[in-house]
Image 1 (spheres, rainbow, N blue to C red):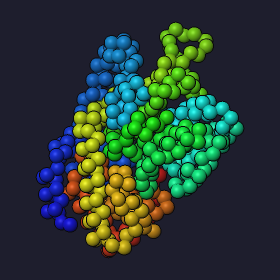
Image 2 (image 1 turned 180 degrees about the horizontal axis):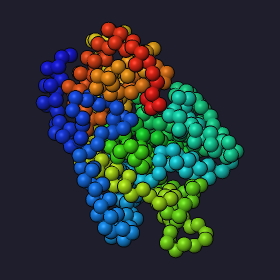
Image 3 (image 1 turned 120 degrees about the vertical axis):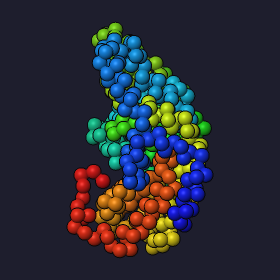
Image 4 (image 1 turned 90 degrees about the vertical axis):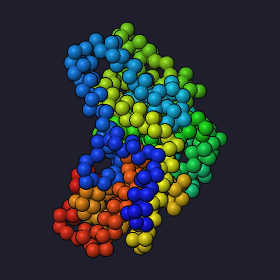
Length: 406
């Protein structure tokens, strides 16, 4: 694989012009959009409008005049087609962690007599920590099973199967249709974490008959650091949905200011506190851009990018251990490799302007955000990785330090 090969692929890429819609630093190869998406060029102007126009001039009137009050529902409706949902099944609110807590609580309420939440070891930590929080209150019981043992672990005590569709470290995907059916056949509900899926790979919650889902706004949806998350509840569960964080914005009539809680209809009852308007407004820009490109086109390019990187790495670093599945259809929009010096290698890459990330204890992870990553980016990253490993350029004191955020 050569630089000329990469440039030919870029010239033929139907999405190549979308790269210009993002504010990417000159001289930086950015392969960490699976952790924090790049800045859309339209986002600063939109925030300026919200800050100076709607907030600065409109002040509190903008809850009505700019329709801030329905922003969580409106942006949720825009996310819905990206994950195979109907408009009124998705709401933008809070963080993934908080939404997990709400939906685990909702599932426990809907399956009285069952307390087990089934997941897998090595799932993203916040997913497991949210179970632990409810377990500490005596409300839930955590059960973990390896991917190949999940179906056997489904018994009459399981209230909820909770899994991440694309594994954050390895990048492997779960079979959503098969596992959802198995859980529901056992009388359990299913909650899918789409944080490493939404905006990059195809997801069809309706086709797999999912019950609940959550997803991240700051990765492939490019909503900015700490962007609000989204949550999905299948319409068939709307009437029965009861979540534990019964805040005033999830009330049927929040400005009636009554003492007793009455839930809003449908997914809107997942709201709790006042929504962060600046965060949702920024997220909307990224969502609009990803929706314009289209998930099928993004997924096709994602697979092509990751395969090009994999082939480049295999040629230049045949002994580097690939952790992600070989089949691009069996993985998300990333590739992960194992190396004992993964952290130092990651730091050495960053020093050269090639940004991937490190996951403890020994994983090098590269994300391929197809909206703006080019094949030339991928080639340069593979070339830099090969040089750093073959020359041991990572073996310097400044690359041995562990940063607070990796």
